[in-house]
Length: 272
Image (tube, rainbow, N blue to C red; front, side, top):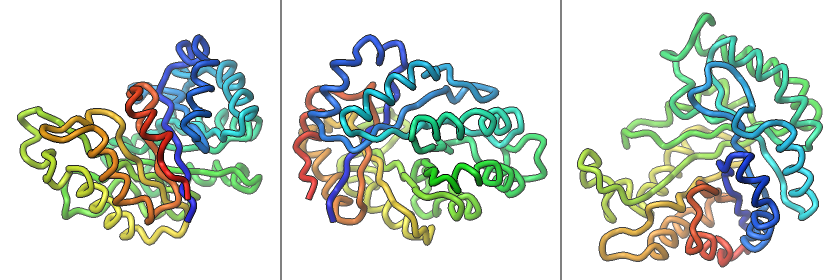
């Protein structure tokens, strides 16, 4: 199947607007199908667009459309009314106006222990999906993303079944990268369970356990790819090769971590 390549855009609006022409050229050179723009911070207690305000997002969306590149808007979402109510009041309307999809980053935020004021996570999920019903009726696309988890034998806990069944895309983060920190141990080594190829294989196995029928995306890392006795190119190539024929799209984290070597690698990925 033809492979699409996208990029999570964690560069703040101020930097993006300042270097917009340069960034647009880079996006074109890498052949990206879309960018997924982070609009807020994980520390925010309520929904806002402080990371990438609406006026700047509108400019960026128009510029991307002009070069034929799609846009998704990525927001942290937390299971509490102060976050969900504000999100539902603003985000769907903005996404419709800009012709963008919506992606929710669930990493570390969408579990029973995080619920506030709602009865439980199921009730929270129901409220969120009901609030997005009109957006989906208008052909709005909803995605969720999280990581593979830290227990190899445990299936994906960051993707509740009710939420998975109510979205169009799942983007699973399979970020193999060199981490010399002592607490990482051998798992992050070249041949460890979180090493290049191995983590992606584990991610595909866990992803299949969701029984998700929508679009499946694998997230890959473009940072810390220099392992001892191996090149950055080797690491990125092995990770890509493990998934490129299994999913229709790979997505890299991230713009802020993108170096010339990573941009060159992405540019040269075969799309067929």
